Length: 303
Length: 285
Image 1 (cartoon, rainbow over the protein chains, first blue to last red):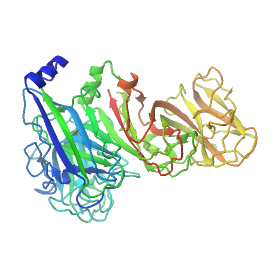
Image 2: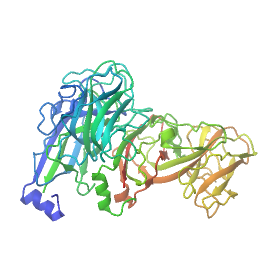
Image 3: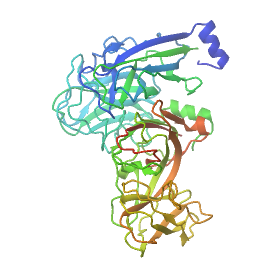
Image 4: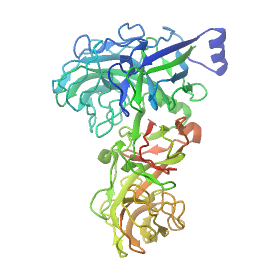
């Protein structure tokens, strides 16, 4: 349904009580200081929700779905299913008091799931297993879905090995066209990328952030058929994560909250689908120390 | 197509017809207060470019050749538009700092300031975007330092296709740092902003046929044809500047397929050791 008017919004959030505030606390990565200019998946950091232990586990190359009830890769609680109502983010904030954490950008995403890739010494196309499909109800034909590749091995803190392979996926786009591939210049992995690092982010040719580029004209991913490394990564585990980006929060100053009013300031009211697994990606603008703590909140409303 | 309404814009975003990417520029150059600077020559992401090609031979620029800010792939026959830009820094030295986002179209490399002969430019290749030159401006980017104080002008074909037009005569600054806009200076008479004024009545440049120095100097510059797309101003280190071009300016600047995007900046001090972090969001329909 959604909100038909400001009156409807006020009635829903006050009279009807269709409102939830959730506070969260996530730490920067646990083992390696974050590098300026690179993106990181804070699901791998400690805090609340807890650190991911699902990445890198399960059947190699097989898609695993994530939801708000996932226990080994939890998302920020948003109050459960509200269908036939629709839920939206009204306000968001984030801040840190930890030294040398600024500037940075947080991006909230709904993680639909991931493909663990343990065969990182295999070059060429590797067929992905789509027995489990992207969660229905959280996308329409893949529209708006994006992909990123992160290093993580369950609860271990293993980094990637030596190597700078080019990364390419073969996918079916939002229109149902199969055989679409990542265009050149291909994303290039970083050697010895640490746990939680989006491995092709950074500075230089073949560096992107945070998502893998899609082919010309494409605006989403229905499914991914193949994953390709041009050269060995020697060791470590990669994860191809499928997500929907929801909002960004830039921060410049330690101790000052970045606050986003998504009703009045940036009128967008991003929708949170039933089952959404909400998690933060982080762009580090400075060398960010291990376990630097970030705090914030999300306000949800539905009608 | 573009957008016929705000509803159409929202629908396009919901359909995933949007791209977000971050960029980071960390200049090593000691730029000068009040002198415009070309960030495409600075280290960071995207990788810098240096206007390096055969002297005086015009070269088209594109995302597929030189990268530039990542705005996603081609979307034709749909049209792509800039929705939002964010910039921030934690170093105050260069602030406040106005910035201009440009589509870099074409450059003529290594124009020699050591001769007062008319230097003919090779136009074997032509503009690949904004091909009539409407709204296309010219900037002179330093690629080798000079003493400064000399003047020059160029002969060009305007956006109506009229050849033999002559730019205003502009004076060079004494800034030796590569990437500086040679003709911008807050103290020099006849120095200008980032772009060189055209002959009265002209609104764009299709090609440049020759350049003439009115006095010899050392140094080299490139003449670069750009299409200015959007402006913003970074005021301080305590907050990011976030511009939503629809809400803040009532416009959605168009980004054509394969555009090479980068930024000009007018710092209030040296940009060296200033890391600029930013992002851009485009939407197409």
